[in-house]
Length: 368
Ligand SMILES: Nc1nc2c(ncn2[C@@H]2O[C@H](COP(=O)(O)OP(=O)(O)OP(=O)(O)O)[C@@H](O)[C@H]2O)c(=O)[nH]1
Image (cartoon, rainbow, N blue to C red; front, side, top):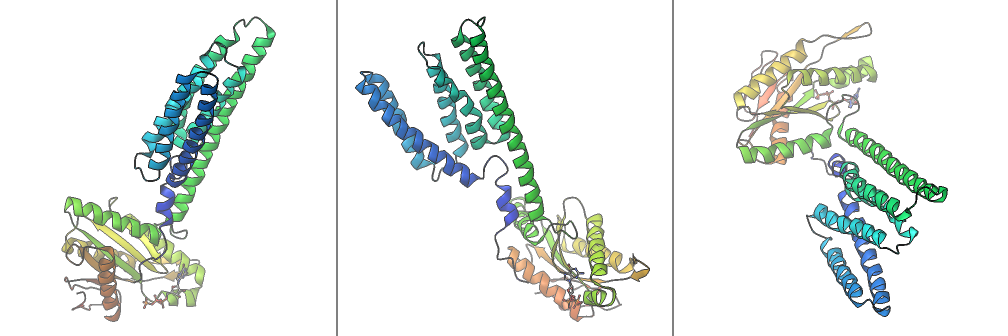
């Protein structure tokens, strides 16, 4: 069996669940650091020229920190902390410039920038939790800034800002909710086999790697089984491709029904399925797979007015006895499966277990 060479699309998409994908969030944050840092240098020069030396020095220090952050962000694992470390002072700074006695009305447009930045960098939940209190504080400062609300002019200004801010927040929130849902659908599609609804090969491969890592830590064993339907080509050739699809769907359901919730099953491609049985000893794994074999063999499937009976062969590899890595386990299980096919099909063959059933044959010598 060849292991998949393509990248695991499901896992890649998985990373993008909160907010933008990690890589995109990183580049966006770096860009913001660069832009803010450069802008602060310009403002600092203007402040110094205007005689506000200490304000200029403060802005230069902040820009130096931002340039340092720009460099650090390329590799840091603490992206989230850096984002909070950027957004909280930035939003506080917006509030401070709004609080200045001679603050221009235009300074309040920054309130509208808060949800955009927070949602883009932190995603839906954290973006809302951070931007909402700052926006409310900005609204209060604006209200105080307007002074006498008895005048229609001030009231219009207040309404404009409140309405615009509220709409901005609602639209960005709705956009993020839909984007996350669409992304989730994409993740599900990338991990699922459309015909059977089971995990596809790439997703099964990820589960196997995760299982190995978990079992390395816990020390508990598991079994990998590969199942292949016998003479499936005949089903397609005699009853048609649709009937073949029907059989595949039925077998998929049959496997899922029989396994425990901690076990995993996936369609590896064509008429081949993979099973991961957690916390089992070789003899238990064999017994369970044997039960599956019998279930498939004894099942009569109706397709229109036709009755279909199929059998399947299984190869089992045990972790860690037959191999510690996915590639070796696949190779061993595949080797056993091949032995079972050669021995007459409708068989269960395990490496080192050398047990078989079906058609009264005993399979010996499979495995490594
Ligand atoms: N209906 C249907 N058939 C498929 C699908 N994927 C692969 N197949 C068919 O599965 C058949 C596999 O045939 P073979 O590899 O010769 O295997 P087999 O006939 O099961 O024989 P053994 O495995 O040696 O017992 C081919 O006819 C493929 O066209 C699918 O998604 N739907």
